[in-house]
Amino acid sequence: MEHAPPRTWAEIDVSALRHNYRVAIAQSGGKKGMAVVKANAYGHDTTLVLDALEQESPDFYGVANVSEARKVQARLPRARIYLLGAANPLEYREIVERGLTPCASTMEELVTYAEIAASYRKATSIHLALDTGMGRGGFLPDTPAYAQALTFTHPYLQVEGIGSHLPVADEDEAFTQEQIRLFNTQSPTTFSYLHLENSAGILHYQNTHTNLVRPGLMLYGVSPIAHYQSLLKPVMTLKSRVSLIRDLPAGHGISYGRTFITARASRIATVGIGYADGIKRTLSNAGAQVWVKGRYAPILGRITMDQIMIDVTDIPECLIGDEVELFGRHILAAEVAERAGTIPWEIFTGVARRVERVAV
Ligand SMILES: *Cc1c(COP(=O)(O)O)cnc(C)c1O
Image 1 (spheres, rainbow, N blue to C red):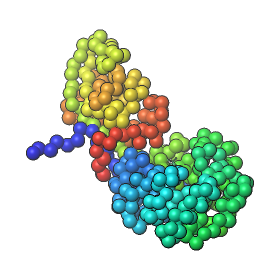
Image 2 (image 1 turned 120 degrees about the vertical axis):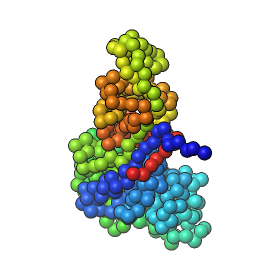
Image 3 (image 1 turned 45 degrees about the vertical axis):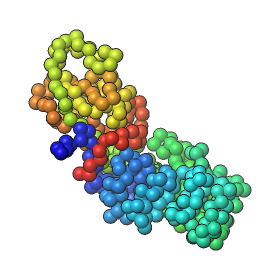
Image 4 (image 1 turned 180 degrees about the horizontal axis):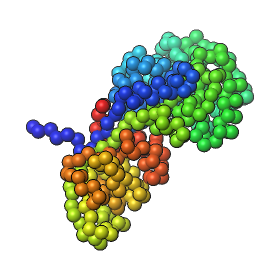
């Protein structure tokens, strides 16, 4: 049986990914690294990303939940895996059995993990989460519970690290500096791992107190702060192909709602990608462009589920079958996000499962 190539695919530049990881470590001043690979490695495909990053030997891989941890463990059985947020109690036993590293925000969590670790007679490591301003989890600083957690000891549960998170490192320097100061005063260096910085924290702040950084977005080549974009290389390029080209007269409506009407006789290409692939429908009539034949071509009218229309009137060399870039090397995912009214994290994680990821 003939096997046609995918109509829409995402090229994953594995050497760019390694470059970005090295940039994260260098910008941090040579700290240890936790490669954040939650949400299918920000939509880039966990397996491809693990295979690329393995030679950089991250100290930890950061995931959101146990099912993501299983995937990492299947590929890298010896890797240390950290759960970035609170686990629910139904996950605790598997976390201990698999030797994952969770974090605790309450004494109840610490005690429960300790009991489970003891029941399996399995030495387990855990980190304390400290809420310095994110409001999503963690002990509050200067509280009796936190003081108790800092001195917690148990034969099977070792508190080996303390972590906190930065909610506004890309937009509020004063608040972030205050968080850094608070974290530093609240996290004794007797713990093996002290970690606070996400991508924006790594790129924009110096903190010699922490010894582990948690880069996510920047690994995938997008800086949360535009100033640092030139340090990074885009990793994912989302591509599709022209499936049809038609000549339409002036005054012809394009797509649902007829929100765009041709102002001139136009050459319109139909491209085989839509919102079901992860092209946000809010990009409709938002001035968005694609990259085809080395030129920018505007997207016309509404994004449909599986197809979009682009104006190639001024690109006569564009032909059926040509590759079209939606974002990646020539169009930054951050620009697309801004036009779509969202953030690059959501653009990446919104790339649908049906889009094949291909290492390049
Ligand atoms: C997702 C996440 C990160 C990575 O954040 P980026 O802004 O993508 O670098 C770091 N730490 C925690 C706790 C996270 O949940």
